[in-house]
Length: 132
Image 1 (cartoon, rainbow, N blue to C red):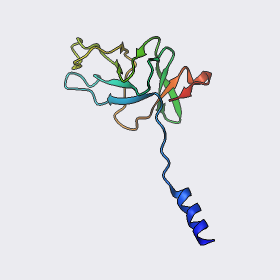
Image 2: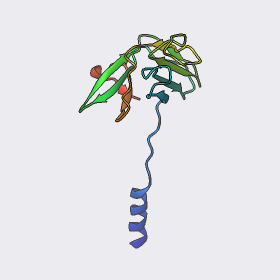
Image 3: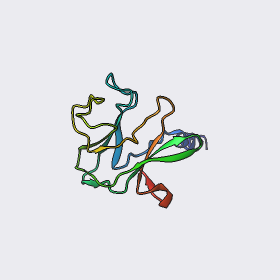
Image 4: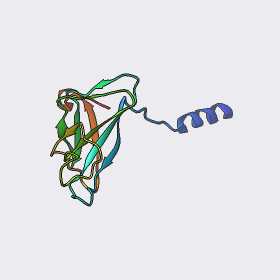
């Protein structure tokens, strides 16, 4: 009986890890740059084995006790193993230090410097979108 109890205990105590979705938030710049405190960006990475169409995908952020929509992507595809950059400014903007042109420029990219919780959804979360 003791080995069985020990087995159950070990099985229940085993760590559980979440499996990442096909697209992950791989990097972000939340603190701005020397050019501007608003020089912020979010990088998405396609970890799957197929190109991903981002049309309708939604990025939300936590504000108090509720999630708010930061933006909805109206178009965009991430090829296999590639990234998709969403920035507050274009690369050639005077307030940007980006070395590459983002696939989407959106003034809604505004990341707080503390307590940041972003969630990426396939379609609108209010319409039953699935969190990635």
